[in-house]
Amino acid sequence: MTNNGPLSGLLVLDLTRVLVGPYCTMILSDLGARVIKVEAPEVGDDSRNFGPFVEDQSAYFMSLNRNKESIALNLKDEKDKKIFEKILPKADILIENFKPGTLSKWGYGWESLKDKYPKLIYASASGFGQTGPLKGLPAYDMVVQGMGGLMSVTGQPDSEPTRVGTSIGDITAGLFTAIGINAALYDRQKTGKGMYIDVAMLDCQIAILENAVARYLTKGEIPKPMGSRHPSISPFEAFKTKDSYIIIAAGNDKLFEGMCKVFNLSLYENDKFKTNANRNKNIDELKKILENELKKNTTVYWCKILEENKIPCGPINNIKEVVDSPQTKARNMIVSAIHDKIGQFKMPGNPIKMSSYEDPDTRGDIPNLDQHRDKILKEFDN
Image 1 (tube, rainbow, N blue to C red):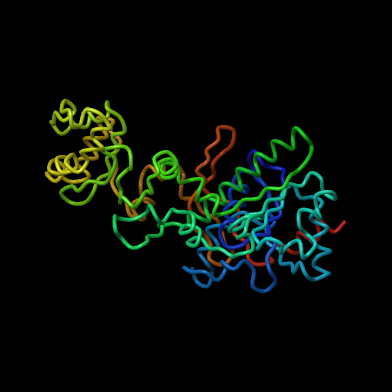
Image 2 (image 1 turned 30 degrees about the horizontal axis):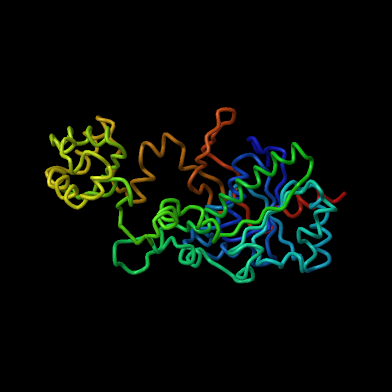
């Protein structure tokens, strides 16, 4: 496999499974790196057994592992360790998401490798990181969504705890790991040395709490769920229309005035609503006034009018509507890869668009377990 992208020529040893690590290595692959996925013999990546399935193939696995090569190795087996150690010297990056300490027991921890391979960039993504009282505990996405405070500000007021509708605990950790790796690559260009990167899913949830943490640290307020409403900007939420809902995000006074003129309202002249601070104080009254107007017509109608006046707005799309959207298609955000059994498989594309590289709508093939063993053995057996 040959990749085009800013990371072309780099070799990634991917010792990860399920979502955090595979998401990270998929990003690196999309950016041009070669990824060799090391999987457990016979069973492979756990996610090969996660639904939904296309025939007997996991769509979950396929959506995260395009354009990777697979070899099955047991890193506790002496024969397989010898194979791994032939590949390792050629690797630029090693990524793992085992429980902290696992690879060290097998002889492949950072402390064991850093002197032997001084240019190696070694990244570990785990639930709680390599330090702290929780470092030895396992974690899944929903665990860190809860522990990281995200679920405490998600959902409707007084609702039961609500999980964010995608695995943001895993995905943010994958993204931050990819960012760290790219920063380490740049640092290696200057110093000639690799480094160790420690990313914790819990840390990543804390890092994205933005306004919620700011409110607590500055005001002592403990934020609670607010539905679709923004905690400090208004109008900035979902409003009822004649047939569904519309998101309106009038984030400053000028936008608010423009929105009011669309509705033939003079609220921007009213002291209650002139400033964002006052709008926040009177948000319930403002919402009632706006919904009285919005309920006179449909979401499609109001989106068209507001868009024409450059007021930030949008419908609440379901997944079919997102996938079928002309904007999604124009941005090449649904791409395909080939699996040798099921043929073409469609999945989300790469949101990073770069002027120097193409953004192909067909990506590298999805590997079967151990599919590239012979190729890899032949290449690295010297």
